[in-house]
Image (cartoon, rainbow, N blue to C red):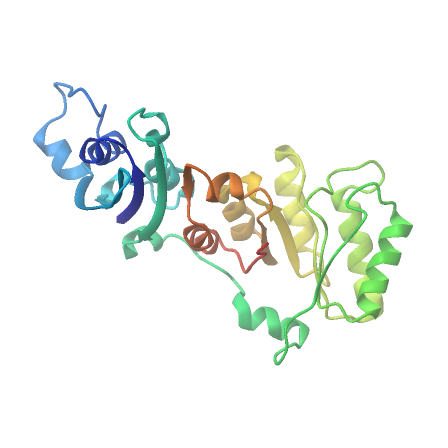
Length: 281
């Protein structure tokens, strides 16, 4: 797998080696007696290209052997790609700009179950932009207010409705109750709208919540925020029969700044995790 990093350092060559060594075999500055040639040949990452610019900046290409990676784990993949360089003092800035995934790495990922075409077909919108709406107030709703808001959106012609990512397990209107109310409402209105409830439940309630959501006939999607992690999003997507909406609010912590991953790469990782839809802001 090939990764390209834009690095800022006063010692570019040393910084590039520090990432390759530190993210594969060992300590960038000290070699251990147990680092055999066999280990290096099988698991060692290698710097294959350095394109230097002005101001101590360079585009560094590193080759990671497939043997490093845990199959089907986006957490481990990211731990390798964007780990220790944040802790190396000679690296002032490091942005992961491009990744070329080997087929062997991406095979275990199912990817989107629906995708653009099936999402459009489900609401019968093929020749225009789909119109989305978000439920507000974000939280503090009761059953009656929720019904009114969703009814008005459906009557107004909204194609896709999502709950806000802030809406959690509030008293009187928890996830399991909300999906039951909305499923019955959509069915009563005979609507093709896509509704994506925010899955903000405690981990101990997650599996039960997924199973109950899968039973809903009229709710077609779920909504999960960036802070849940890609592997947890993948777990929900793999175990759900619903469209997977990836809610990216908060992603700038990951996709901007001195140490970051380009949003384009993040979108690819989201697709590997099963995202049918991602909102862009």
